[in-house]
Image (cartoon, rainbow, N blue to C red):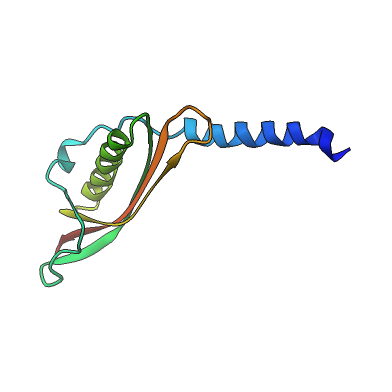
Length: 116
């Protein structure tokens, strides 16, 4: 009896996960006010800059490098909305999309910093 429901469960899981991947952006335009926001690997000088909050991005793409660039644009746009000058990257993950499309989902989490 349970075997009969396995295909239905697999279908529901695949379509549910594919729906999540479909809603992710493939292209993120960099806003003009975000052009001067820099991505850094270490927090800036604490005497000059203060945290403005967490920023995060999740993007899907055919090539991981392009998806990473688009995710950086999304982080920079969010940081600009917080009047930040820098984003220090805290976490980077990438995995294959669940929709079997061959695309990669890139997730970035960082902290935005603005001048004191």
